[in-house]
Length: 217
Image (cartoon, rainbow, N blue to C red):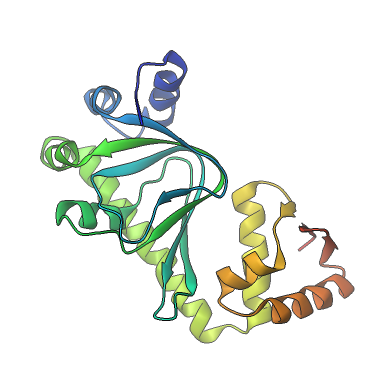
């Protein structure tokens, strides 16, 4: 983590949050936060980590997962540009270890915010309180949608929804992703995913390549 003293980074923070936070809060974020780069496939935060800082995403994409009792990962939600991780607030404030893993889906820039400032800002800034509440609300909706999908949707429908969401997140219909990665995210086997992808290809909804999928849905 590096102090925020680069003009480009400072301008990026101001441009992204000018209509989200008070001017004084933006200045405090620049003064108190730390800049961090996370390369694709690197871990931002892991299960069991001590939480002392909260990530605020400037650019990129972070996948948040949780392990079950068999140490199999379950996809919960994504953190996109302008997002923060609501669950991390609780872990930080109560000095709990992280229950989740955050992995960069693509090269990501973030600002790491220290715990003591986060607590002060909840009292000091109305827009920070609203941001935290909205973050909880949005992440809760996403987790409820994940539970609904697991409980009620057929796997082929979940796969189509997943690929459509990936196109939206990556802003690209040509996805660089393996069958095993999809299987892990959808909590099923690679063989099943490969079979369903072949069916979608025959239907003309996707085009399969080597570790890539072109989505037409």
